[in-house]
Amino acid sequence: MPASPAAATRQEHPTPVTENITAHTTKFHGPPSALYDKSHPTGNKEPNLSSQFLGQWKSHLFAEASRQRQLETIGPRSRNSNFGDLDPETGTQLLDAFWNRQHCSGPMVYRPAFTRDMSCNGPYFTPLLLNAMLFATAEHNPNDAGQCSTVDGCAGGTSFRNSVEVILYQPDTQALCKSRVTTIQALLLMSDALFRWCDERSLSWHYMGIAINMIIDLGIHTTRSRFYKSGSLEDQEIGRRVFWAAYGKLHEA
Image 1 (cartoon, rainbow, N blue to C red):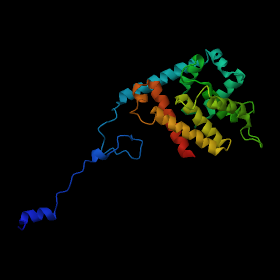
Image 2 (image 1 turned 90 degrees about the vertical axis):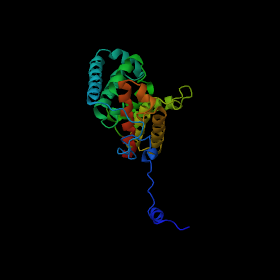
Image 3 (image 1 turned 180 degrees about the horizontal axis):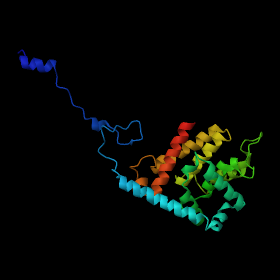
Image 4 (image 1 turned 90 degrees about the horizontal axis):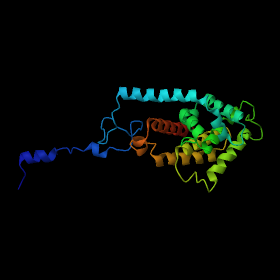
């Protein structure tokens, strides 16, 4: 039986299928990602942070940072004990050089948390991170011990590098087996110094790869992870700094 004219018309011009675009959008990538489409937001939306809350957040971090900077001059004795065999005066000079000169890599270590925990052995201080910071800034040693030589470009930081490698590869510490923020910071600093100062690019990329995998393990790469939802404002600030430091180093190379 032939089709009616109306039915033929419907066959010639089929009704377009409306595709559920939202169902195909990724729920993993956030606004910083190139795959994020703000015109089709996902069901799991980011919390809408008001400007008032952001202002309070910044004010709180700024106040804590100012308070900690004042406390740095009060309790240097407790920090000096963490320098080990290194002369405390030399260690203090190197740390000052790190905070003042390492404009690219320095922000990945949040100074208020590091100096506070260095005095009380808190979670954001470890000997691994300290030696990585000293190695990264040994190039700018005020005593000229870290100046480049024709034999070994990073000879001035050999002792700090050896200390880092002992902690990383010592079976008792298992530093590479457990993801920690301080380990990520140390690996990023070592990666930057080895690439820029010592021209050891293979080892630099090796440390960078481990750091990136640890970032993913802890969920620092996405604001929907437990790291950001359960952490304090300081934890979130440190995570943000670590993520963007890794992102910057990855695209600088």
